[in-house]
Length: 100
Image 1 (tube, rainbow, N blue to C red):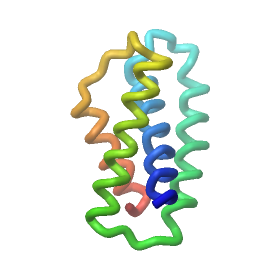
Image 2: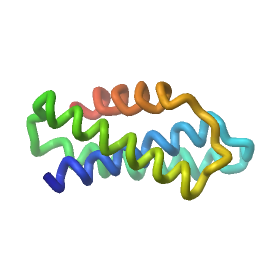
Image 3: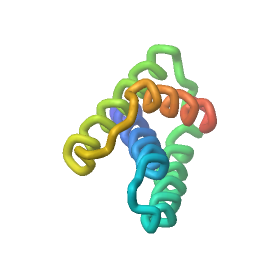
């Protein structure tokens, strides 16, 4: 479903920016990263309001989010080091925060 794909992408973008904030070697980037988290988070929240999510939906959203995180890390931030378990934890935490 395209809503699941889109929501997964938005959540992935929030989480990669949270990871960048935590692990950046450029403290001057933190303000911009906070802004990006708020923007992508708002988009994700808007997408959650219309639906009730099954456990299967939640798994698919989390899977898509992690795919987005890995893809962006490989393309844009290959030097960013973080445990994948941390990304998974942040995905599920953020999903809970926004009611997924």
